[in-house]
Image (cartoon, rainbow, N blue to C red; front, side, top):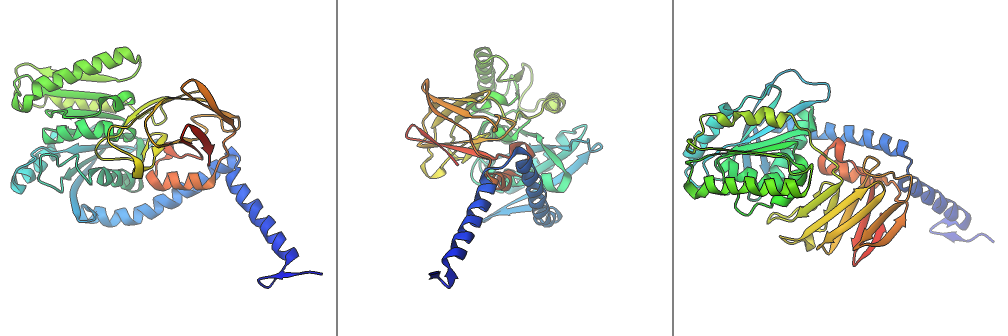
Length: 389
């Protein structure tokens, strides 16, 4: 006797469930070849979608986010290299002053630097406040700039650089470590560090410039101290914390364009998109992902720290203060055809294969449109236990 369920026979229902199960398994147990094919198609699809949106914004020369509007100008220098253009985001000075004064600083910033190759992107801060470049929603706005420049001008996400003068330098001190996984290199001119999270710069080249007579807000002293801290960190972590600090003894706040050497210095570097050893400290603007680490923003707090390293297929969590920690994986970071091990406090807590998952691929592409940060596997660490998605 054959029973029916919602108008279907039991045999038909079982067959459909089996088909559904096979389809689901085929999307969560991908070969590398299949994962790469899905990634390539999805990346092109999402870039095309972003381009439609970006074309309207680039025509209007402004980006809107909620009730914020960021105007901008772009200039393109040199021929486009085979691996894509560079992008230089250049932040103007000014700060907590009049709109007219900040407009003048914006106009000045447009003429300050000339890269040999790349898109020179000069935004006008949507605010006229002292923290104009590192308060909400600057992270979201700059992330959108990078996404759109990938779509509009074929920018290579491994060749994105940020620089800024005065209040723009303040912004670089904050944005360079907070958004470290975006930058090929960074340049700070005549700003002050405030409470910037220096340890996040482990894998990002950072150059700083200040006049020795630039005593306002103790810029000269603080930049010199920052340089010494970078010296110490570079010694403690050989091969990391690449930096170059310039204190021009006889120069005031305006350094007479001596800082323009920062542009070719930055251009000599490419982003290390998948560093094997990451230090991540949450800033006051919380992030859900940093390189191949992630967390739940709902439980994230300023100051929470994680340090995780990869060697071969072995992942070592040396420190984790997050309630939940995500580890995103791809075949450039580990070999997903083999078992992946995770150790916490010297104890191995995971030793299994991590399946490639189409949903993880699509989600990571949607987040960044970044060819170097496409992930196909994900681990979840919570309460000392590890599970794979």
